[in-house]
Image (cartoon, rainbow, N blue to C red; front, side):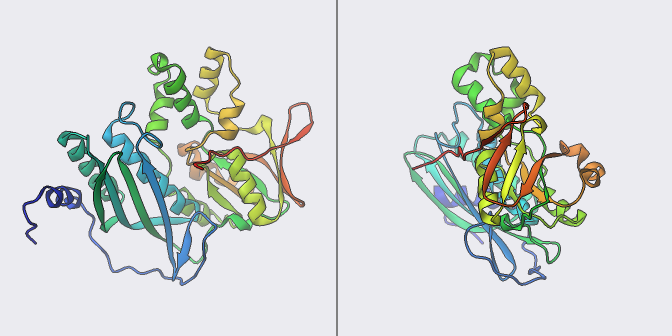
Length: 328
């Protein structure tokens, strides 16, 4: 197909250059789930949508165009993963900042094309507009390998509570950029993780394969908030053991360097995109399957009742309130 020789059409063509082929592979299992989880499900398709707005979710004076796009894609993929699925099809919307240079626009187009392409995600359409700030918008569809999907409502009393990977990385990176940018190179891994998180994108599917049948969601708004979401959705209470929190080693080093507590980064830091889940399986079953991706860490217990509580090192217990970022 020959597109008209107009700037917008040439730009769209750049995005579509590396698109993965569309395969005739419908979901094997047909199910339905309305809003309220990390994904909805319609006729077997997992469906999620995320927006990334310039100067709210990404800043191009901090990150490269490639990092900004990658962070946006990961935020969508993690939702599919948290339901035990794999991403397949995307619709992508882009608001081009009118002040972006041609080089920036072209780098973003290439990053979108390659970002979806290397994941095997087929980009089947979308829209392009221009405005005063840039924005990425993706509707992502995925499927599961089997009949099981992981949902927020699956936690049962007696389950253990786990997180994948380590905690606090993204929020610590953001704190550095906002408060001590002159020290960013000293803790470059934290800054890089905030700008473009790297996660095990098939972790949810791997958990299902291992036999996990509990509750699951990704940590996009901080552990304290996600634990409350999970407990409320499942009609249970959760106790988190502070001493078991897998705070990232670089976060601990950074906090020691600046003389601040690492706990707020671990409990309230958003944009982590690791998985929070519950299971009646023992921790040992996850060891060989997940050790190369930061491991699985048992951090607490699901109990009857309501609310989320933090068990302190002295044995005391306090209520752990949700501390999510709010856009409104």
